[in-house]
Length: 153
Picture 1 (cartoon, rainbow, N blue to C red):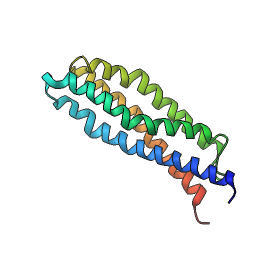
Picture 2 (cartoon, rainbow, N blue to C red):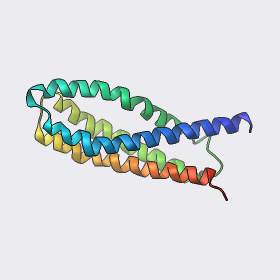
Picture 3 (cartoon, rainbow, N blue to C red):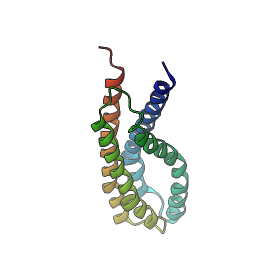
Picture 4 (cartoon, one colour):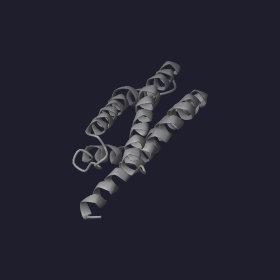
């Protein structure tokens, strides 16, 4: 195996790992974490939400950055058995995720940082399905890419 093959494998493995990590995390957030915001004490809610936003950044930003960086790198360092439509589909799904995060979820969190609002919390849960579905599709996509790459024929 030459250096370029090793580079391709490392980029691809980092991409698969970041995507599957985020797929699992978004399901936890969607089913457990965001719905439980409604059960947080109202007096403590603003401080809780601000701390949540600060700590969550450390958990989600590194894998999200790895995921998007490796998604772009796959245009140049794509395993031979991964189709270009798969790379494009993955990038489109990432665009949906990042746009949803920036324009739907982050504004909800910013409003919730000022105090609990049931309507905003419900909007957060409802709009987060966009990311949950998109990351689930990405997870299936990278598993399919991995299958194509390493399947025994």
